[in-house]
Image (cartoon, rainbow, N blue to C red; front, side, top):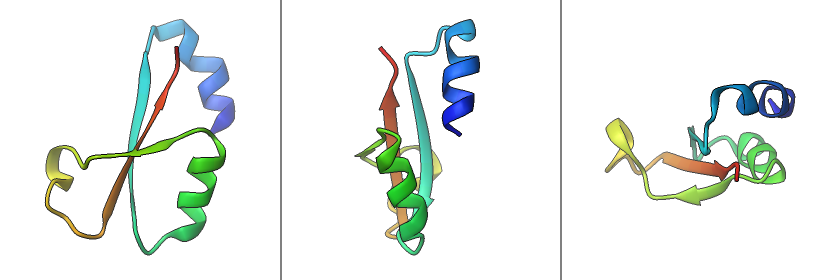
Length: 60
């Protein structure tokens, strides 16, 4: 995942990455946090889902 960030992102001009994971996946939450992702309000189909956790990483 970190490799994708470094190799692909500069070439396509993205400003941020967003993802969704679940509250029953503590290992995933730890990984994303260690890569610089911060929790944000749920978006799209995840709004109102009590088990969804949405995260974002700003690239600039």
